Amino acid sequence: MVEMIMHVELCKGCGLCQATCPQDLLSTSDQVNSKGFYPVVLLDKAKCTGCALCARMCPDLVIEIHKQTA
Amino acid sequence: MKTVFSRPQALTNKPLHYCPGCGHGIIHRLVAEVIDELGIREKTIGTCPVGCAVVANEYFNVDMQQAAHGRSPAVATGIKRVLPDRVVFTYQGDGDLASIGMTEVVHAAARGELITTIFVNNAIYGMTGGQMAPTSLLGQFTTTTPYGRKKELQGSPIRVAEMLATLEGAVYIARMSVHNATHVMRTKRAIKRAFETQLEGKGYSLVEILSTCPTNWGLSPVEATKWLADNMIPYYPLGEIKVAAAVEGIN
Ligand SMILES: Cc1ncc(C[n+]2csc(CCOP(=O)(O)OP(=O)(O)O)c2C)c(N)n1
Ligand code: SF4
Ligand code: SF4
Image (tube, rainbow over all chains, first blue to last red; front, side, top):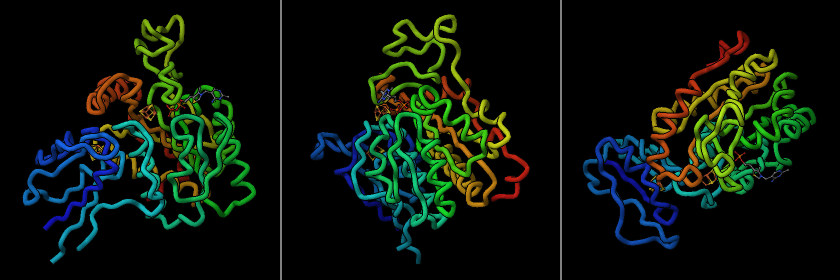
């Protein structure tokens, strides 16, 4: 299982992560964060493979990824 | 739980001030990841440029020294010569390094200073509002080239990596890009090799990194990555431009 932690207060809604996700699992929230940006949301937790490509493209260290080992 | 991806220790917890989608954030993180992986956080000293990354000292969790515009390689030379057991890097934009600071970087490379330069080429002056840089492409619209950069008027863009590669003292020179995740990972490997070149005392190392400035290019962050791929990479070829014999064994 993959656990994705989104530090949404750091997100600037740039969309680079969305354009990167090979499974197309990322979208934009309809609620602004305190900076006034529409932050990223993960659409389907179950489908995320934990490849971390989104996190590698994020300039703002919004995305943190952990994986269950067992 | 195994951590696949998290904030590197060599970055502080401060939120970055860069514009949405700016390549500086990615490049900061890559440098920090390399510092963590090499276990050199307690002995690394960086220099801040003048440019959007002027406050990089707030973000890198290592000792940092602000340098006057373009003078980072001279400041880093001093630090490294006084403290030869430290790992010293300069972080510079293309205005900082290739305009006002061209002299300093050329001579530091020629002297083979044991420092590493992270050179962020976003083809424009970001901080001051989008003026032409020596690296701006022919035809590129900037506030100082409102009709597009013209060869007859402004000359051709400077390929810094190739130019510095002609110098004996420069032993590892690479050009990478952060426009997609694959290239982000390649960029990290090059940064690591550059730091290792310094750690092994081989000579001057530099990684030029093609980066985006969505704000001053007038593009969305995603469009900017496409513009980089379509326009910058054809003029600025990617890869390891120079790996001197002394460096070949490293990694
Ligand atoms: C001596 C001096 N000359 C000019 C300036 C104005 N200035 C500030 S940043 C900059 C260029 C920044 O461009 P670049 O190095 O490409 O960095 P970026 O902001 O794009 O990251 C200039 C010309 C200055 N601060 N000091
Ligand atoms: S790349 Fe980072 S800052 Fe940009 S939208 Fe995605 S999570 Fe937010
Ligand atoms: S002006 Fe350009 S280089 Fe500066 S922070 Fe904004 S996007 Fe980045």
